[in-house]
Each structure stands twice: as C-alpha cells, then as structure tokens.
Image 1 (tube, rainbow, N blue to C red):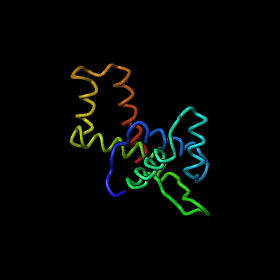
Image 2 (image 1 turned 90 degrees about the horizontal axis):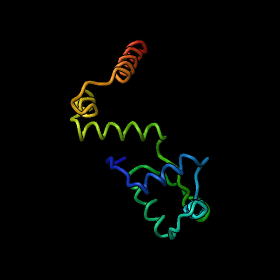
Image 3 (image 1 turned 45 degrees about the horizontal axis):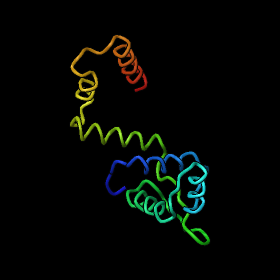
Length: 128
C-alpha cells in the first residue's frame, strides 16, 4: 500500500463485503449483490469506489476473461491492525498510555476494565 488512508463508510462497506465473499469477484457481480441488499448504485459509482480501494492498496485486481476480478489485498485482522496503528499514531503520537488516558477521559479506569487490561498485559508477557 503506497500510503494508508482511512476509508469512508461506503468504502468500508464494500471492503467488508469482499471479506464475506469466497474468492475474486467482478464489479458487475458485486453490483448485483449490492442491488440485492437494497443499494441502488450505478455501475460507474461502484467502479469508482473499486478503483479508489485498489489505488489505496485495499484491493487486488486480476484480469479475467472479460473484466477484472477483485479481491481484498489484506485480511480483516490486518486492516483492523493498520487502522488502529494509524489512529494511535495520528491522535496519540503512538502512545498506548495517551490513548488509554483519553479513553478514560481523565477518570480512573473502572475496576473491570483495569482488570481486563492487566490480564491482557500478563498474557502478552506469558506469550513472549
């Protein structure tokens, strides 16, 4: 991916549909799936989104017999990790501590969240 960009709601919806599908799919077949879900997009609209997702590195495209077949360039887990890291870097200078402080809003963490965080840290240390 040349540079990481956050997705719009529609781009995320399209990428999520790819994660649900099994294998590459054409823009025409994908459009039909979205029409069945109640979306009234035109082919050119969907194609614009697919090109943007491809150019940003979220989709791969392979030539088919008459058209390109698209598939996700990363798993949902990889996407979520990149998205979380992007947010952490942009909003909290890469600091998990600053993120947790912002999440807590300056208040102490509730005991159940503090316990969950401590358990997670212990689990991470045990897996090293």
